[in-house]
Length: 454
Ligand SMILES: [Zn+2]
Figure (cartoon, rainbow, N blue to C red):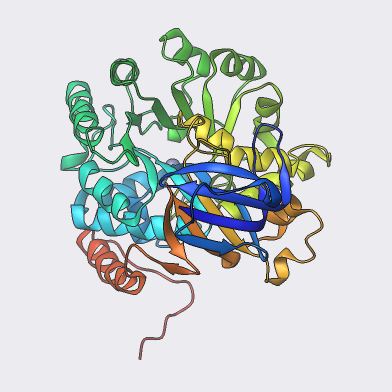
């Protein structure tokens, strides 16, 4: 049993309480009590008591769109590469030589970054090859996740990227059986389609049917994301609806270019939308001018947030993502009333949980939920003065103030130190494997400014 006492707590509970002097009791994996410190009484002596007087506790963030394997080549692609050349010229050559070991190491790097910036749960973008191996790596770090395998059936690619509709569905079925049978329930798999116009209608319907049979959600991870026709990812929402696949289990990512009627349709069907602002801005997708995320949220669509990729946004820092979402639409609409910080925090927590069908288990600090908690160090300039804790969290806090993180009741970051793996050894493997992978893919490592090595 763990007791966190006398902390400031942003609960995101039903009443959206912020406790100025609150305590939390954690028993095993679960939160069993939350409330004003004077009311909270552990039923037995806790094994650990954390003095929260200089800490703020918030629910762990949920990132609903991350590419794990691309983290190994973060920063490789220079800004002026056209967005429609990303896949054919860079990412496919890298994916075509990727090993299971590289996928595992890359996943762990991404996980460590997320933990250190307050994210405790994520959904992969559906671009993994060896999903069981990555599931093992993610479990080792101790994160909660939904994973998916590289799935498309339209355009060929070199060797392993090519798959027929039947092969793609069979591989997904096998993945669901393997990963979802794992005894620990931290990591699960869903059918997650790549999108970008690479999926046939039969594959989309097949993936939705697989998800229904397996009792999971499913996702189309890159849809209506860019104005360029060359990306061919513009299948209209109404077309998807005509296939009979849109419902609360469906998660669509990016979705910048939608019509007003689409927003209503998404709301009616209960479809979950993953908004990826950092990649959208870096890839000049016209987010601020064209995105309808303000309208989606207003009309009751569940909008969550995604960090995307090591060469898209180049980071998985939900604090930076929240800051952007809370500011870009205000500026674009010349309206300080849109995207209030309270709504943005909901997107990063409880709405992200709902997008993954986990709102009954995570996303807020309430009795009966799993203990996925982030403890921020208030003895840092960004948190002072602590007049409005929620404003500080969305607009001022950085990952540098993340002190301690619990996932499923387990302390995975303790006073700034990872408890589940040796971070320095991981970083050394990342440096070695990254260069080896880029060399095998025959890609250059370029810098506009000369890197002097001797
Ligand atoms: Zn993506």
